[in-house]
Image (cartoon, rainbow, N blue to C red; front, top):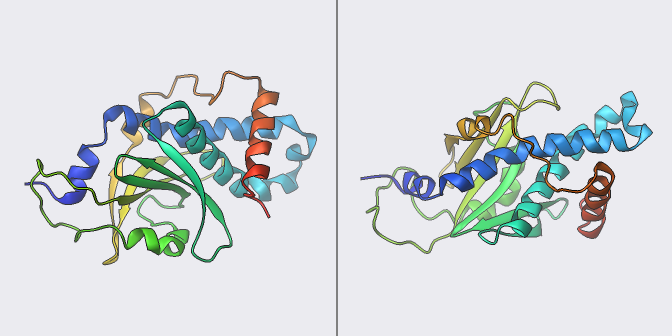
Length: 209
């Protein structure tokens, strides 16, 4: 008999795991496009902006994914302290946010500001359920990604934070590697169009204040 999280993870179609695994790499492409779109991004001082740009680019890719695939829906939400916005992606009974972490074993620091989501994770870490039993409980998960540099992705994981503490991790990198050589730009538009779309996304959703 499988644990609840094993069942949740196994029930995510491989096509969805592949889409989610691609998101951080799509974001890197967007970062490259934005850096090349304005002379200011070629300056050394722009390196300080990289973490913010990376976070917004990842959220943008999640948002675009929901626009293109009706299996998903996305909305912009404030965290508990109301000092930051993020995209929440919903598919089936699952709610997903995305965060950068320095180590693949880490849980994002900002996850503590989303504990209202963690609180709704319904069962204990290794509680078993019948795999044929349907559940309507929403399950919160975090797409974590990271690397030694802001321009590299060394791992992509799907983490289930537990209200009892800790988290359960599944490796999505094998799915990401399936698309290593694919063209994964998020739109068919020109680089300039993509840069404009990202700017509009930031302004409309007040992602930078």
